[in-house]
View: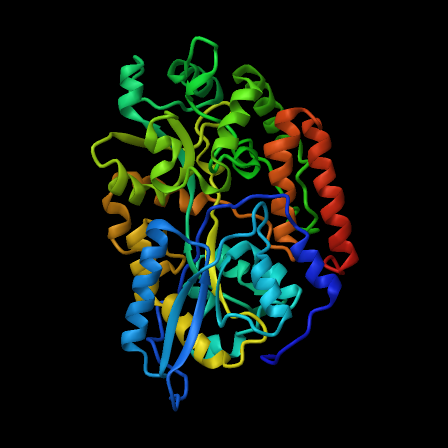
Length: 454
């Protein structure tokens, strides 16, 4: 394992900082049920200050600060962690400020990473390998849901620890449904029912412009992955590891989506997306909480938001509607992780903090505060995560959820699916088939170029 400083080539730096096409994806990361704070690291002679960079806001930021406060009060290695908010690079999963810091030899000791990007950052040399430290702490693959573990490992080495996870389903406002004459206890189960319900819940002004959406089918967590999995599509061949966005089921999903967008009106779809750009509709300003959208496709983290922002409104959650019926197999799991950027001078002390964050105390505090789901199997069995019936729906989806392909081009792949799903297909600049073929062609060629298939 190499903990030493490294220099980045101009090509590597530009490859990451030039990725500005996608958008933020929500998800989460989890932790091991082992190793308390201070375990395995030699006592420090003096207090060391470690910056922990994160893009989280709202409830998530509050919980992370609480975890850091607890660690600072209890660790035995003489470390003080400071939370540092870092705004995400607009339109991309690549974090330009992090990459600049690593390239300049002054990285933060701790970084909150979208877990599916870990293989890419590991491949390009931005994250330090922590295999030996994890093994010494007793961290084992058997402790985790396999998808979460796989996303933190690259070529057999561990480059992050997972922190939480999530699944996705259809949220609906029962009060608005009742007002519109719909049965609030009977959510839509297939595409035809969903479209009919959305139309009944949509309100337009005298000019025909939407003032309340039934649902925006490309908003929030209704990504290309969500639609594709609902149609039993696949995004990577398990045998060849080739990316397969142009799977016939994915194409059919995007053709049906495009037809629905045309029925709703692309102008209204785009107007909502523009109004919510740059996080303007996050947390309490979400169109779902403000009542400007009666339904939305989102994750279990909304349970915590419902408790805080709309405790007196009645909501329901159901599996994403499939083309012909319920599609519980349609959900997918994302998540976050904590990693140590390459060039950190005291990896052992940083790992002590990282292991606490992703250990039993840290992960359970975060997941209970925010209603995410632990990726540590034992922790996820805590009765808390099924006490709220809304959250129980997401827990039921976890065993049948999928994940994004864990490849060393994960960030670029996300950015390309974002552009296809939010721009090219809805606006008709590419047909669904051409947009998906272009993703496969580009990503598979680059994977071939770096020897991923060999």
